[in-house]
Image (cartoon, rainbow, N blue to C red):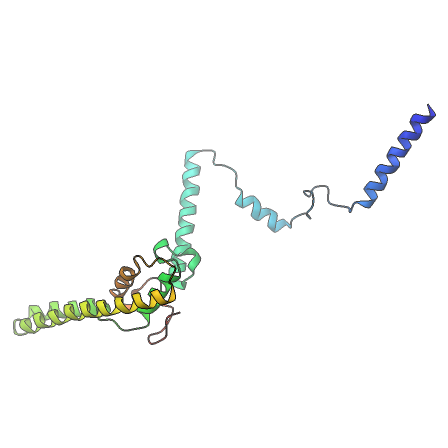
Length: 197
């Protein structure tokens, strides 16, 4: 009878000593970390949202997520933020190709205004032959400029990114030269005459 009480007393003493030696923690907090701030908990709760209860609700959530992703992508196209750019514009090779094109003047970027001028000139009977001649020079200028630009770009890309895949970078740069500078997306990040980054 006395022995069992002594054993129980020894057990409770040992348990109380262990409890005192452990640091106190919030009973609501998971083991090993402090209670999160209210703002963090709310953000986590929003991130881990309840599953959709109906098809309509799931479609609304998907539509909202798609809209948010497109807004981020549109903003990235204006600012040049790499994280949210479309897949075709991402990566250091594509960024260098964009900067290479944006750093210089190209005949192809003036194609649209010249084409309108040629169209107007071809409607006037006295300037039709001049319009055809101008058309030939513009096409020849675009072809020559494109060939020279792609050669220089490929050479620089091979020097700068020897281990990267350069596939499609020349076509990407050519498509960019066809757009007028202020209409290009992603927006140019360097001025004309600057060295590509």
